[in-house]
Image (cartoon, rainbow, N blue to C red; front, side):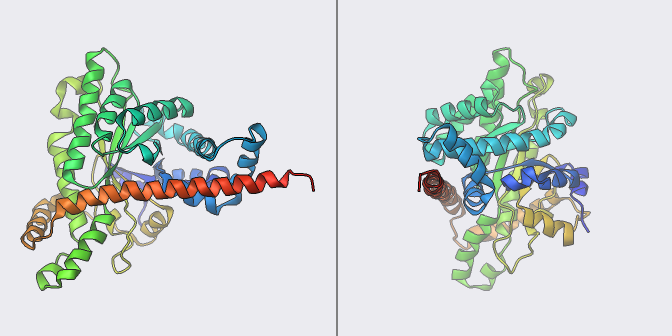
Length: 374
C-alpha cells in the first residue's frame, strides 16, 4: 500500500479537499494528519455538501439562533464555516509550527459573487482574515481578471492567499506574477516576507472532462489517442513554468529576505471519468514543491492501491508538449476551453453558495419553529 508519507518524502504535501464538522470533533481529521495530511481546503461546494447533509451543524445553528434569532443566512454560514476553519487550523497548527510556516494551512474562500470585484474581494478577504485570526489560514481568491490585482494587494498586506480556479498556463502565470509583485511591494515597504505563504491551485480533472468531449466528437484515431492525456499535459507545462520562472532563486533579493515559493497546488484531482484510474491525478502529479489536495475517497484509494513511481512527474515534459501540439493540429481550441472552465467554475461555486444559503434559511426556519409554544 502507498503511504501519504512517501509523497512527503518526494517533496509534495497532501491536503484534504473536504471539511465536515463531525471529522473535526470525532478525531477523523486528527487521524488523517497522523497519516500524512498536512492541510485542508474548502470551497462553497464543499461547505454546501457538509452543512446540508449532516445534522452535526444543528446544535451550532441553534446556538447562533439563540444569540441572534434574526441572523441572516449569510452570517449564519460564515459563523459555521469560520468555526470549522478555526478548529481545522488548530489541529494543523503543530504542522505549521514544525515546518516554520511552510505547511499546515486551511483555506477559506471569499464569496463567489465577488469574482469580478477587485475591491470587494480585498475587503472581504481582510475581514475573513481578521475574523478567523489564525496564522495558518489561507484566503481563497479566484484567478479571474478582477482577482489578480486583489491577490497582489493581499500578499503585500501579509494575507496568505490560495489562488483558486486556475485552468491554464496563462492563468497560472498571472497568479504567480501577482504573488511576486505583492512580495516586492511588501519588501519595499520594509515589512517581513517570512510569514507570507501562497499556493496556486491548478484544476486538473475538469480539463480532461471538457477536452475528452471534444475529442470524442471528432472520433478519429488521432483524437482518441489523446483521450485522458491533456489535463496532465497542461499541468506539466504549468509545473515547468513554475520551475523555470517562479522559484525563489529567480528572485535572489526576495529570497534573501525570506520569500517562499508560491507552490503549485493540484486541485480537482478526484477522477471524474470512471474508465480512468481513480488515482490517475495523484500518481501522475507527484513532484517537489507541490501540493495535491484531494477528497477523502481519493486519498483512501491511493493508500489502498496507489503507486509512487520512481520516475519524476516533471520528466514527461517532451511527451506533454507533443500531446498539446497534436491537440492543436486537430483544431481543438484549448485556451478557449480553459477560459470557459474558469467561468464555469465561478458559476458552479455561485450555485453551490446560493443552494447553501437557501438550505440554511430553511433549516433556520425549522429550528426556530421548535421553540414556538404549542
